Image (cartoon, rainbow, N blue to C red; front, side, top):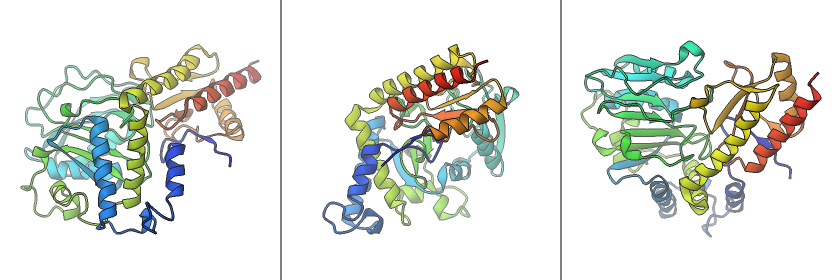
Length: 361
């Protein structure tokens, strides 16, 4: 069996130990005589899986008791609609636009309330995080929305916006569980699982209980109401059972490693190795403002588009796949999520050095 180094931005690399464990349990989970894929979500055995997954996530992130953990479906993108539908009171929300997904979230929210774009980095193709210290927060804002890590552009907030007491909501799809987080500073954190946690199709929502309201528009579809999901323990309908099971395994993998402090240390080492090479290379360079760099998605390019193409092609032949940058940015992107081993980043940097040597004139 030959596994490649998969630098995909998502669906992305999963820990090998987790995949092996799941493979071993594929036909028979804990002597039940069936796969998790086949079992009823109403069974005692699955209830134990979802309960344990929630407990482990709470332990990992030190989630306070007054926050609900929900395992939902529809991708993080469905949350762009659910948030305004469930949280609208005054009919106004503030959005910080740092990339493609924050922009999409604002567009979607504008169907339900008045959206104020209070900061943006679009002027420099989202290559930095705008100053969030003294934002012009709307007096009547129902919430302030941010996208913590911007997968496409490779940027990350390194300080939280001062929301002047307003509820902060964060899309943490591509950085959840990559570093310690003070959950109490947010009203809600949500994340699609497919980048740093598990397979596509599962969404994690961590929401403060006082934000789960019943007095919302009665025409809101039941499946799009947080109160319905919270009351039913994420099982109003059949949840993404296998996805939740795999997420639970990833939570245990992280706990066994020493939790978010330990994985953060590893992530910093991996990212530093790659950024350090980019900062000294004559051929390759990072595309992001140094103060806004992401630990998860490293965006870079060479001295020409032709060389970029050549690099991506040769890298693939050497077992480094999915390094092509997003279609809107071009260049290259190495997504080095929690499950990417240090050996993968070391091997990539060695390959880049060799490529630079071979193609320097």
